[in-house]
Image 1 (cartoon, rainbow, N blue to C red):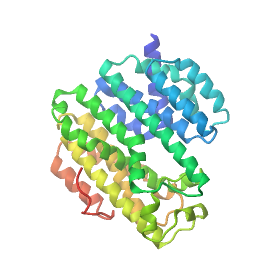
Image 2 (tube, rainbow, N blue to C red):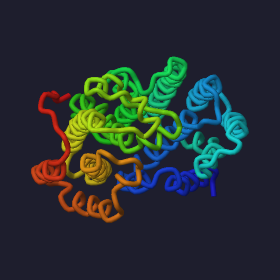
Image 3 (spheres, rainbow, N blue to C red):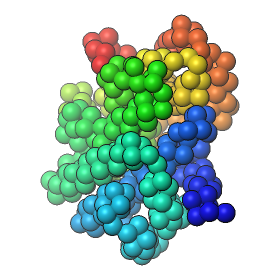
Image 4 (cartoon, rainbow, N blue to C red):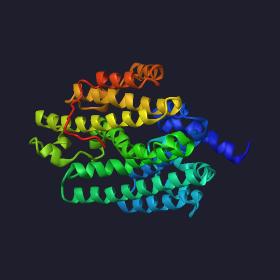
Amino acid sequence: MSNLTADLEFQKEILPGVSRTFALTIPQLPAKIQDAVANAYLLCRIADTIEDTTLLSTEQKEKYHEQFIHVVCGEESAQQFAQKLTVSLDGYSHQDELRLIENSEKVINITHSFTPTQRQALERCIKIMSEGMEFFERQEEISIQNNTYGVATMTDMDKYCYYVAGVVGEMLTDLFCDYSKRINSKRKQLSKLAVSFGQGLQMTNILKDIWDDQQRNTCWLPREIFAKHGFDLSRLKDNDIDKNFEKGLERLLAVAHHHLSNALEYTLLIPAEEVGIRRFCLWAIGMAVLTLRKLSNNKDFSDSRQVKISRNSVKATILVSNTFVKQDKILKILFRLISRSIPQDNSLNSV
């Protein structure tokens, strides 16, 4: 077994441990881009682990983010990066993520095996993501010093979502367009929607994980939105929510729904015969819409487990998506039906 073959086996084996969702969706993609998308996700997961951990100081996180950019671009040793970061994460509780860090060299070996176009897409994504995370780590430190909670404005939330997810939408678009000339002919339209697609998925995760983030003294909700409804986000520290909080949450649910609507539009631009790419997109959209619906029906939730969709819902999403994957009109109708109970705002313009 060659080193690259062994590395690819590791990539396939570790993926379910760091993301059950992507372990389901990535195998639906065409074989020619499966490895690149899986590798891209693992790179993003490494960057995200650096951001999320409480074991590193802001200065350490900045150092590791910058080093990781150089490693991905082939300018520094992946082995040395992995060794240093593993030592710094001594005591880290998520064993699969720690194992991923320990084996960063294998992941990077795969990255460096791709075509120049694929490598460029992945390198750009990680550079923007890591630099964006650095920026928000500093902002979070300032917020703590000023005793404020959340991000200041909706624009700040948009910016955060771009750095951690919107740029992934751009990267996937680059990979899809490189894979197919027919998809590439729609590049301009796809590019207009790619960031919105990523933001819809990221906002869904942020809203679902409000209380998980709160336990880490982290909040990505915009203060201005909740202040308009008379709610101070600092009250989340005491699990003190009321109807004013729910009004602010409704506004963000409407924004997230708008972005997922754009995500469906993006997906329907993909040629119908590209069933694998459509499934990859539709499964993610379906699970996100079901999560938003559950959030909408349980605005007073106090634990992410209360709004987690069931395995049966996941299975139903897969079945329905696969059945109607080529039928655009039915997919649009299903999206409207499933999202009826989610707050919507017609004043939100299309991207």
